[in-house]
Image (cartoon, rainbow, N blue to C red; front, side):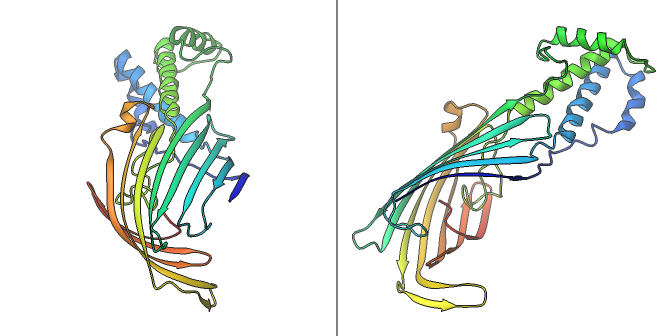
Length: 302
């Protein structure tokens, strides 16, 4: 049994998807030929995409976690329970700060002689924006009329050479910030797809503010022994060959309600693993609604 709490601080970068076509400065020359409504829409689109571009959010990453391990082995458990909680904080020089919380519970149910084990995992992740973009000090940008009035007041203090009316520019600007905050508020929880969850889908195929996953995997052991080895790249003890069959379901949603727990995506597949004293090398083949994926990875999916 092991309990642990970890805290890590480091560096990371995130590059948002940029709509370069809609953010092209060349379109600015066309604004004078647009109607006021079209001008406002165009300005709002540009402001939102520009903010997404400069919002390289994740300069500093903090990580904290708690693991309660009631299993019989740290690397290759066959009996017991394991709970893990992790919290990632993304903050720094970006326009918004957010955090992600992951909760995972895994249970291991072996047969009598421990030659096979049924593994069940439930995983839940959520994200939360801690700091949204503010542009006018204490003025709430979601209060459209007040924010527009503040923008107009500030704009009158500056020289202008634009043919676009101040009110139209300000309404487009405020709406662009609101749209950025709307997209930013849907920060992403841990995604589904890839080598660990919903293995028939590409990495990060599904993502939203909340994610839910459940999986079953039946593992069977063969050729069990304790054979030492010492190669130039690794040394340890070979313990077993393992086959596996698995079935997984998962869903993502912007809200934690019935939408997160219905209409699940699924994956089913088979795997072959080499179990060593210090590591498990895993090869999985999974199929689902969108096709098949083959994974070669270090460690178990769950």
